[in-house]
Length: 112
Length: 112
DNA sequence: CCATGATATATAAAATGCCTATATATAGGA
DNA sequence: TCCTATATATAGGCATTTTATATATCATGG
Image 1 (cartoon, helix red, strand yellow):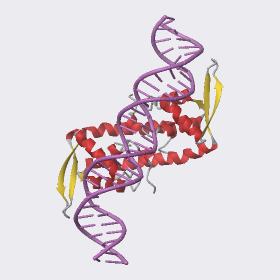
Image 2: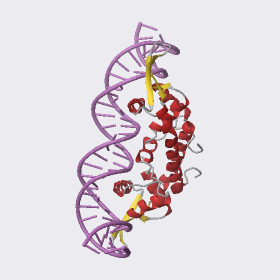
Image 3: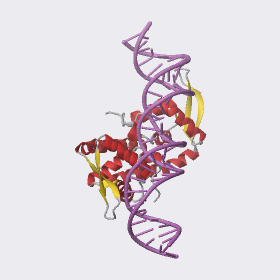
Image 4: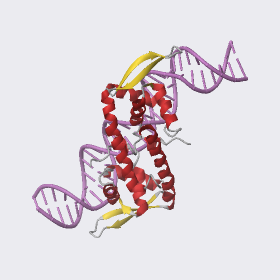
């Protein structure tokens, strides 16, 4: 299964990150891998794309990061959703849902 | 109903144009209005965004344009899908469908 | 023991996609 | 006469994501 092209998935990275963080706190590298695995390789975001995005979310106080150390002694940043971040998720989901609905009205994407 | 933010709809303009042109040939201004009406105001693309996009599609030979004159005597460009453009539509729909499916695996967008 | 791939974070430069602003021009309604 | 709708067009700019590059440790296989 080939990954969705960036032209199509553009705009979804932030939503994808917040969504996987809603299930559980993760460190940066794991966020990327989890998005990829959970979508069976359909959604693949470059790690170099995700780090700046994580800093942006942190600046907005939607996620909170803290350094920890892996069992192998590697330093890594642990990200978790803040209360403010959780509040963003529902309206974001709603907007994506409306977007899908709108495209379906143009093209019958869902059941084509 | 507020329009979908460009952050979210980003990447969908080309698909939206090809989709409405699949139903019938239209001129540029009508393409924009039709997308807006058909999605009940959810998808709104600026006209200034659409014209360069139409030229790009024309260059790729996915659409073919010809000048005509409105009943009011106004000059306008009439766009229609070429055979090549029609061929693009099915795989594009498939890709959008997969994209939706992928996001649903992360966030239950469809039935949240 | 050394190469390779996985884990882990980070920044710079570039490409892409859409928006805002601006310009031009005609028609119709208030 | 002014505003809105119709109709096309270009320039400048911002936001999002990619590619390229850098650094460093751990595990596996040859």
